Length: 388
Image (cartoon, helix red, strand yellow):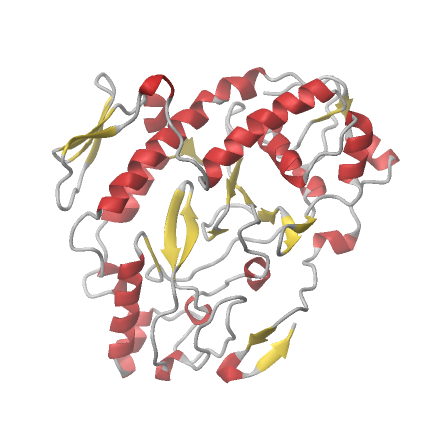
């Protein structure tokens, strides 16, 4: 774990003041690993009438077929009550449904118990969402996830890097970037600060800072690589030495079991085989859950017969295999960064007391609340418009 001479590292909650509680989907079926299943589920819902539609919808206290809610920001969906809804399914959007598991969601406010519209308002190609995993991580593991997609997983709090669309107004304590620039000799970017946070954040979510420019640059470099691997929004990562996992034996039409052979570094999906799969990738866990097992289970676990969630691809889609191969690579490369986190030493610490003396902390109350977004109208229930 990173070590400092003073145990006075500022909390993440002070450095990134604005945070939002996790989304609460309320039902499973509006999320799926493939978008085609979501459109088929929507069509099945609309074909049903009366009590049958209600049973398929799976109502809760927060959402029923008669709930009146507006559109999610930036999403074109109907706003009439679902009891009489018609029309096509909203175009599914990519979300982070579980750690390192990117799936698809119908972005319809009527289907989601607690959608956190404030997050949708700032979600765009520049945004990075930081998610607290909500569990005590090992010292060599970061207790955070970072994603380019809206996170729908039920874990800890969500901290967007930017408070407004377009990568403007970073969600950092006001004055922090200028103060770091004065101490380091070069003003960091918001992404630099996020990279540093990922590289050094402690299990208790405190973030040691430094005035040593060389140490800072090493931490940012390591964190940038972590960020690139977590976001997976650029060139496809590759294992060193020309090693790459690939399919050695064809995957079955509908694999039901997953088994790992540590000696052969082979992942078995029934009679299908993928290798090489480094042990570090197989053993990679978030909040005590093995990522590869959870990813496979999300695509193969039985659903209640007759439910909308039971509408799935008739066979294992080829894109899932490609996603699995990339996920294995990402987890192995992230595991390779663990020794750097464990051995990273921080000199010339910049403490919480220093930030208080400089007037950076405590962050002002407005910085802990969403920014006002007043540049467009959003459709409310039954087609009414409200300027936010």
